[in-house]
Amino acid sequence: MKNFTVLIVNGPNLGHLGRRQPEIYGSRGMDDVPDMVAGLLGPDAARVRLEFFQSNGEGRIIDRLEQAWKDGVQGLVFNPGAYTHTSLAIADCLAWIRIPAIEVHLSNVWARTEKIRHESMVSPHCVGVISGLGIDGYGLAVLALWRRLSAACG
Ligand code: DQA
Image 1 (cartoon, helix red, strand yellow):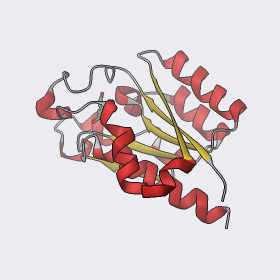
Image 2 (cartoon, protein in one colour; image 1 turned 90 degrees about the vertical axis):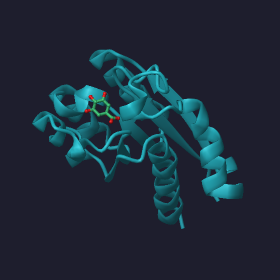
Image 3 (cartoon, helix red, strand yellow; image 1 turned 180 degrees about the vertical axis):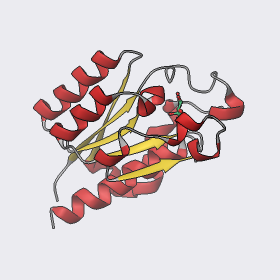
Image 4 (cartoon, rainbow, N blue to C red; image 1 turned 135 degrees about the horizontal axis):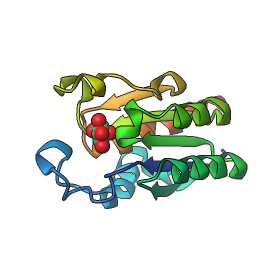
């Protein structure tokens, strides 16, 4: 069976998870994700290489996504933060690189009061969306990508 690389990208204001408004975003950080993936995938976790990237800059995120395309990264777990709701540039990038992506939000954006958080520029370019499960959402997204990628490879 094949091995896969999954890139986990966090956008602006997601570099201090655990400390940023824990009442909204939870008290756990990205450090928890590898163990979570190991627990969810069991022995198959050895077949998934995780890469992590965080940036507050729209252009830097697009550069990293383009690099992932060049590198042949097979799956993307993507929390674009506030760019979710505003960035046509990031949406355009996802539209052409066509790496299977799962959009993740720590908070349940639909339960939040600001209407703009109910809109996503990136969802149309993602295979699925996980919102409101905190850090668990990242592990579950990796599990879903693994199932999809390994099924596609037979
Ligand atoms: C977020 C939700 C966005 O609306 C917000 O701008 C963020 C974080 C989330 O993970 O819940 O920065 O993407």
